[in-house]
Length: 243
Image 1 (cartoon, rainbow, N blue to C red):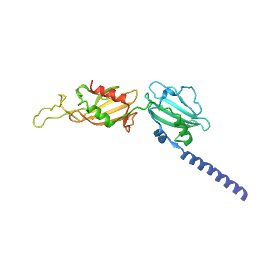
Image 2: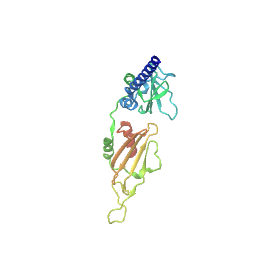
Image 3: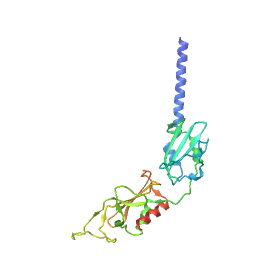
Image 4: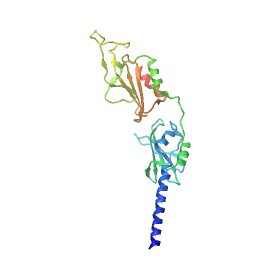
């Protein structure tokens, strides 16, 4: 009886060691957030081949459905891990996820992370435009004439819209709306929004009482922490402000 009890306790101890060891292995890997931060954007999707099935230790391009972002995948046959990245049309990341045996996981091994990141083709690296530089690019051209921009309830593709109704102010003691250099009532607190529905870029501007930009904010796929935009987007959006 004593011998059987010892065997049972040994079996339990062995099982616990396996479970704890497995947890430690997962915890030692790389999580989704860290993995995403290590990716050099944009990704050159043109260098990734489209195939119907995943290929061991290689990036492949998945099917792109209308209205949905492009998916690329990296599969490791030996461990059954799969890394999935969804991209917009410009090669910038929309979402990253990990799976193992078809089940979502929060970590992958460090070795898999290193190998897959090394094989991820980066696109041409442009000199990106910061919020401060973008602000100066607009103000160098003069105040924005908001009379040519519509106020609408929703953003419009490839257009500037007024996101908040402007409030005309009066000149002190005149009783009449004051005018700035653009020859229209000065609008305090104007918020302008530019949106591209294909790339999911959003630019938000706030104008001061003279029509100059006082605040700039960039967004991509709902992420407001973005601080730079491609030069092409800066040029197109500014040209829309000064037609």
